[in-house]
Length: 493
Image 1 (spheres, rainbow, N blue to C red):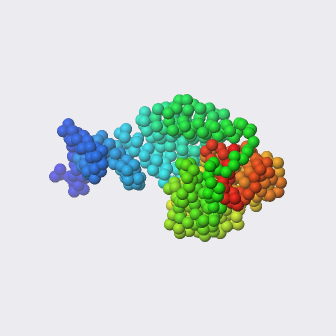
Image 2 (image 1 turned 30 degrees about the vertical axis):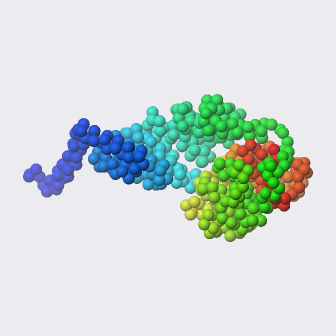
Image 3 (image 1 turned 135 degrees about the horizontal axis):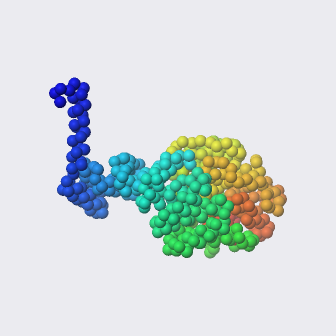
């Protein structure tokens, strides 16, 4: 090496420094590998004993002693899952998942890491267009790890992502492929349930019902099979049977008269509990198993109520959106008429006077969408909203990007034209109910996902009188009405 030029000597020395560790890595002894396994097992023991600090310290020793071993890959995925499942801090898992993806790309565990990374990226998304990076990660799992169990999960997640982007055909293909890959995986019943809903969004009701029945027959002991049962029953009831609406009387049955005080707003949570805003008391109550109890903070003059995943209702007033801290967030106008929170955590707010929808993002980024003035709103299962506009004299079903998918002129399919929509309600199957008044028709109407009239009845036909100001749909397909003047709820069936 003495005959080399100085620059050449420096390069030779650099190469030598790189080559030695590589050779050392290639010559790992059985004793080294045994130590790696012992460190991993020791960390596992501590983890199962919930001595998480000890487990992390041991696994970090493993990562330093044998960074490229298979046991290091296992330690990285366990540490990442701890941040996701125990700490509920998925962002803390990302560096570990990225390291696993980079350093252990050939390991079967890398497929699981990419799947988890894609799920975190999907959770970060705040609108359908933000799903591109997550979709790319799911596709890598499918392309690189053909026989890995994580592929079924990746196909399921691709189905969800394409559904959120209103790409029904690609969503259906991914859900069905998930089921085909492993009919016994935890993702299989979820995929069949979602595939059936996509068929309904495409207008294929017979295909939707057949797939729900297949789910019940092939995976009968799953929660999804139970879910499929009521979805079938409600669809058959509303779309195939022709039974007219009738009044069942005060709801819930057996409640004492005036158990609510001036109910004006209704909203459901994910568990099927009903929230009722009582205008006379400036508060909301939650109705759980026929028992009502106050929930959330007192709010005066609420014009709309939405329920986020936390289960603590938010209120929309003239002063803005009021969350748990009681501090209103400003809106585009001061005449709010309805709202909903979408799956991205964004709150949509309509206004009677401002020709725009206000979108308040969970990330603090707020924007507006051009829109006619709004008289009532309700959430749609595709991530968008049903919107009624007296100024335009129509009801529109918007997708998650705010684009109209269904247009219903006031009075279409009814005995006469009405002038105003007082309230809208919806369910997770795409049915939309309305309280309408003025002109030639005062009463209720129920539309299917395609905008066709499924049921309609005037107040006279129902034998009802009162000041009905809110409507919603329960899991059994009943219409729940809030009667402000008589302090009660009524059910139509």
